[in-house]
Length: 308
Image (cartoon, rainbow, N blue to C red):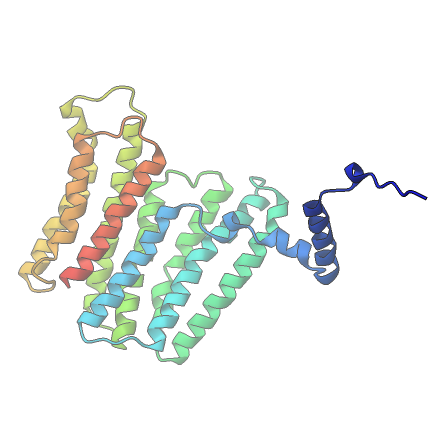
């Protein structure tokens, strides 16, 4: 007797493996569907990549200036970084949840948003508790301004009005800049007046960067290259912000609050602003503008740390 096997009707070997693996996972992991709902990168991590620098720059400045002033790495400094990072990350899932409740996003995103908000919130609470128990309760005072500013941001999200809000971004950058004195004091183990200057300098730099980014975004929608007089007129505000920072840094050096080359990192942003004013970004993609400004802000942070 001859047995005939129709090979063509058999599924491919790879397909058999995939089907078998899927069945095995469904048996061994009843929670697989849950993880598929919550493991969404666009909900877990901030969508605006350039926003990272507004937190990391002040944080790194505080750490390294603290080292240069005789401070040392400690558990409090480490937990401060955890608290700042998790609070920053929580913005994305909480904002996504507000969008879902206000009808801007699907309700299916609520599972992932709730999960990641809970994870970040729990980590932030643990970090704050360790800071307080470790003798750094002043961190709670520095975090107080974040509450109303974040609530303001969420209200704007619910109203579909969070984009291109210069005032909100400038105030928000001031909240992020509080990471500079927090990290500086954590390295020293005590509060020091220089921390407030670090906060102000970090905030002013972030503000100049934001205003300049708005200038570049306005330039990109121009139909033709404007005349030179119009270029200077359009860039006036950004030039004033960046130029003021250079002058303030020179003044702080003169009164010996800062190092001799304190104006150098601010000159980086000022030079970029002059270049961007003279060469409008007509037709340039927003991502190109964002990446360039991210590089400039990173260079500022590096030079700032080096001059200290």
